[in-house]
Image (cartoon, rainbow, N blue to C red; front, side, top):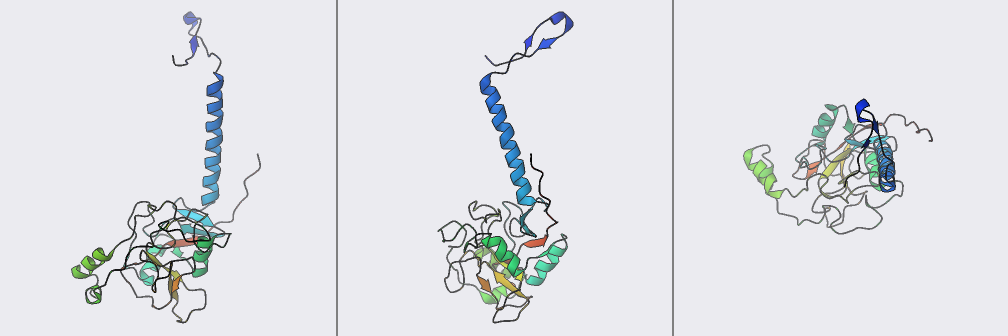
Length: 244
């Protein structure tokens, strides 16, 4: 029989609540504690950043690749110039190379967003490479080029690889789509942007994507069937929560 308030003195409409059973009191206390811990974790993850971004040191970084929505398909055929304009229109900016690497490797300086060793199938980085019809791709955005990109596309929906996350909760940093960032480190080519994180078929040459995998061979107008990006912005000054 379900527990309910015990009615007394019905003429006056008064009700006296009977004592809460011990089991319910324990469950109530546990739920209250869980809610508090969940709220505190959310505050630590966002820490002044917009709800679709994660805090990494003094940086807010998109949780997912553009369009930065869970279960959305990441954008491709994006140039660095496209990325800069898209982020600016949302009051954000492109991530720098060093910022992206820092968010990926975390405080432990991991080689992979999830740890120090590669784990098969943890991220979308093991698809088979497919031959590209360069002539069709060069006609972008013509229908033939769009059809070619569609046939080559092997990205996973954002967040589908739930364990492919950094210690801060940033998803799909390695593999999936290759991301444009602002170059901040020395490379053979002096282009102002580099591609980072490789893509669904790994890195060119067969290497596994790591937090330091970069491609510096292309200028800001270059776009390809696996090139995307995510956005960043400066984080507000962090205020420590008062002790309770």
